[in-house]
Image 1 (cartoon, helix red, strand yellow):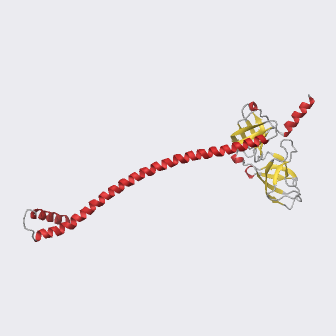
Image 2 (cartoon, helix red, strand yellow):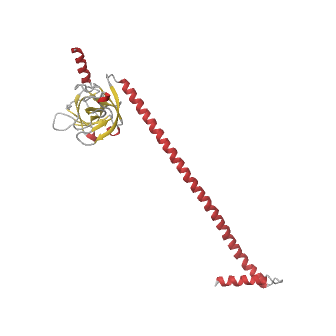
Image 3 (cartoon, helix red, strand yellow):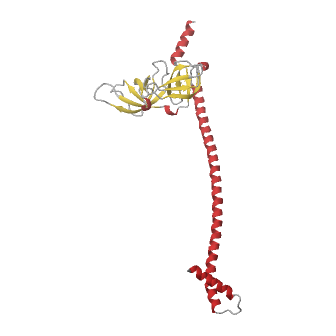
Length: 272
């Protein structure tokens, strides 16, 4: 119905355009067509603005995409530089630690494998007999004891971790030299055994190697006391120890001659 009215009015306007007089019908047509033309003009203008805004939106989206790609590339470079810097700091600390060792022989090794079994937790490192590594040598970091070499091949070695349940280390409380045996508990760290109830042991005390077995020198860090419990039965304390080394994040170790090996070599030289 509205469409028909518009057509009629348009024909009337067209017809009136051929007459010289500006009568009532022409006035009515003008009054009607003015708002209609204004309406369509606004629509046309709105469509044009919408097209322009859409084009701007598309351009901005493309620019944002390019900016995101640029940021991602720069972030990747930042991550590489950060990893390189952290690696540099680690190597610098490792070099300082290595030069501070008094052992006759020491070599850095990179961790290349891991045995997650509970009882014999071990690491595989990329140094072996060709590098002078032998069974019985000890593995350390600047933080403390890592473990002991138990098997070797030409280019690789296996380290029994100090926190493995099959591991036991002579140790002592650093502040008062109270001695005990530190046994591994896997991911739960260590437990300190054979410390009498009357001994002065508190949470936070440092536990270090006692140097009795001849494998580790005296005073090498092992961990800190995390909990002390006095049970009703028995004559010993139950002591939990948190390792000084984070075994899950080991990347490199320093392998050095054990104290016992140095002594044996000195004895061989004396008998010659």
